[in-house]
Each structure stands twice: as C-alpha cells, then as structure tokens.
Length: 217
Image (cartoon, rainbow, N blue to C red):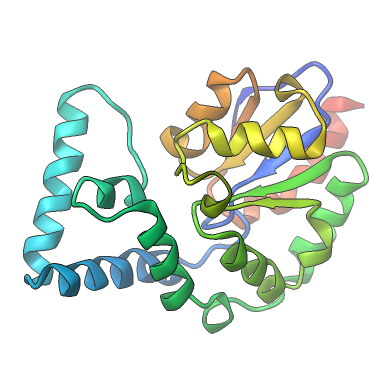
C-alpha cells in the first residue's frame, strides 16, 4: 500500500472494484480478453491483429508522455462507442462466475463504513459493479455505485469521481480514492484535490481499518 495524499479530515472513500476489492488475476485478465475477443469478431479480424492495434495505441500514449488509460477509451479509438462497450460488458461479464463471499472484506468494509461514507467507482456498468459486490457478499456496505453508464466517461476521466462525491454530498477534497492503478484510479482523483491510496489487492484493503485507526486517532 502507498499513500499519496491524505486529506486533513477525510469523510469518504471512493473504491475501485477490480483488483482492489478482490485479488483474482484470472478474473481481471478474463474481463480484458473477453472484450478484446468480442471486438475482434465485430471487426472481422484475428485476435492477434486486434491486440496489436490496441498495443499500438498504448505505445502512442506512452510516447506522448500520457499515462495509462482504460480499455473502453482504447476501444473508442477503434470506433466502438462507450455505449457499445457498456452493452458488451453487461452481456459478457458475470462476477458470480469468478468471485465468492469474502467475510474478511465484509468486516473491513463494515469497520470503514463506521468512519467513512463508501462509494464504488468502476469502469464497468453499475449493474456489473452491483453484482460484483453481491458476489463478494458486501453489497450492503457501499452507499452508492458510479459505473461507466452513469457518466459515459471512463476512468481516468475525472467525471466518475466528481459524480461520486456529489452523490455522497461530500466535497471532493474530503474524499480519498483507493485503487490498484495509479494512472487510472488515482491521477483523476488527485486532479480534483482528493486523497489517493494505491493498493496491491484486497489484502491491503482488509488492512485499512487498522491503518486508519492508527493514523487518524
């Protein structure tokens, strides 16, 4: 875990989902692969060619000094609208196929919810985020969910974070974004004046209640 910014008086945590609230590399990889496979079919080309095009876009971003971006944003460059990406994700991704209840996570979120308002900010549709929380057995711990369908903007755009703060009724500067990708989950939050904590997976998330208790006591 790495803390980049901690607000003086934090009131809300904005949580990423994938590889933050669970640690399952196979599921994280599946979500990318199944969408790229769908894109290749739609384009009528080989999977290898589609992957090569996407890697080329990533290389262009790196060469331009830009940070990482989301798969949805890369798809836009190949003519796939965010709305289409939403439909594909709802069709192809079912968290119940990959995730199971996590009592330790549930306890951690219960403890965090006693101190903070909690929101989920995900690049999946809100429906997939909601099913993911249900699969983990923690759906009752999160106050609001902001999915890509709520703003039609994919992280690292700042819009999902702004909306989460508004829905919670809390100033952005009193929120902390928590996620596993610096460029995608933390940079947009930092741009809004939020706090930012980088985690390596659910193990770090489970340790947060004790960490906050020590730091904020």
